[in-house]
Picture 1: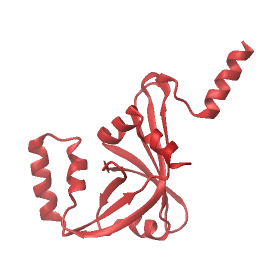
Picture 2 (picture 1 turned 135 degrees about the vertical axis):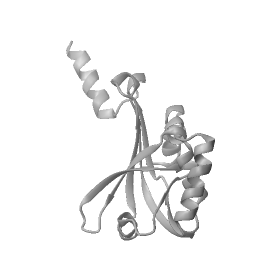
Picture 3 (picture 1 turned 180 degrees about the vertical axis):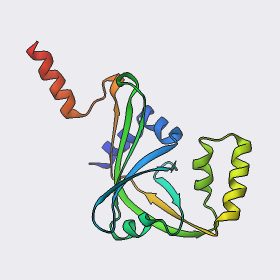
Length: 166
């Protein structure tokens, strides 16, 4: 996928809304044993990359260091009319940091009141000496808005063929 195509997908208003406000994404990667994994996890979009923060000894860290290629899905909606999905692929880079990365607090803040954020920050600061920041740099992206007719190409072709048949 060309960079301009990828940016166009990420800049769609619905994609930006998912990146800004969705509390979780689904991260797909290959475990150390080579089998696929998909996990829900909080995230933050920093404008150019997806940032995930996790504990130092999380199993995904060793797997991502060995095989950094990942796929991400961020979804919303409860019916076909309001379903939206953003799919992203790219490499993950990992960095072990002292203390709590700001992105971890900001990601959690998407689902908390300001008072809850302050208590959360205090609790995690007391509980973690280090965390790992995982940064996923998009190299491919696709945004679907099913209610608006922004569909996967194969589904669009199937619907068009069915309409032609009558």
